[in-house]
Length: 521
Image (cartoon, rainbow, N blue to C red):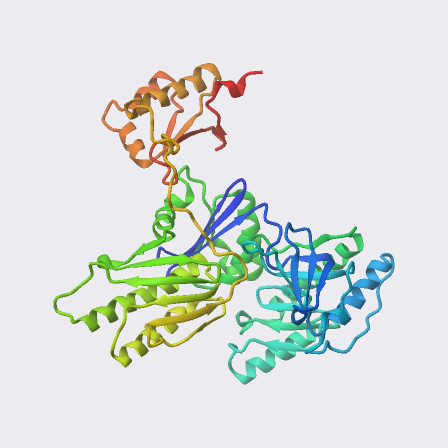
């Protein structure tokens, strides 16, 4: 299987697309202004104690107060809290470590926290809808091969997916010899077969991050972020990277250097797969990602031969309706046709759950089938298709009403892409200038940029249909404009633009305003 990662770095956000055999299977959007990402560690202040919920609301700087349940404090919260309070009370001297008893499983939050108390917390779920972040008091610092649990019980836990008694024993002894004092370690699946040098280097890196946390606590003045999670591109690469990756494409030089350094640190022999994309055509257009995004994120998702899915999100759950549409085969009966459509739908739904990062409860209304063996086959197919999903999930058998229930881990809002476009000509008014004058308008803008502002190196970005019209013929409009205004005039088609949308960019790729009033004093 050919696996590739395409990363589109923009001014205010980052888009990450994962491709398997050129098919889009995961898509992530991250705002560069988003502060409350999963993994961030904060010094927060307890604002409210909710005895009825056995939880507290904590201020970590978000518009909505963060939620911290008693069960999420972690067994070693008393130990961690004592250590942190020593630093806050005496920022000059090193704190002394003292191990406290584990928290009671059936305890109350009032016995542990008080209003106004400063505590060390970590984001475990990003803000979703009207809810603030969800927090945990059990601090963890994730690496590719291991997860460090500072001030936790000094034990080493191994992923259950690591098989073989000898390998498990080797890893347990190896990690025990390099882990820091008073810390626990979780060994991840990818550590299977790794040598001591690589694991020791990663452990040193994790220790350095914990020291950053302690330094951040010492320098904090009230509520503050003490350790920020890796940017989404590197965090995604940390979780997704495997030897099957053939290429990682990124269109930003600084991000390229960061990714190259990260891959070099975890897999030196794979460093050449990181490639800097420097073409004029947008990176997502080059890999046909833009078209896939627009076709896969709508309410109605088409499948082969007329079958389709209807996907709706409510406050409580995500609902999927499977429809055969016009798909029928004269050689098949109703049962066989329903089974074929349901199997195809199961494969697409598993892909959609990953693609949209849908979490919580998912209800699927499959086409009714009368044969129990067919329902079991559909259930087995869904389990097989969901095996590649990294999020924790549970799939229940089909009910007598033809419904399948899935619960899937949710740590951040589902990815929502609005595939509908506002008319770029009338902007919703229903009235527009004559379309035949559109190219005249473009020429006026070009004339203003070249002859009034003196810009010679100009690129016009338009919809592919418009680009085809402007380049049509031997004596095309493009050639006429190059001869009349500047030889450095270029034309670029962009799938993300509406039919009559356009923009001019300079040699550095920065958008140029074509409104004369923007340049007046």
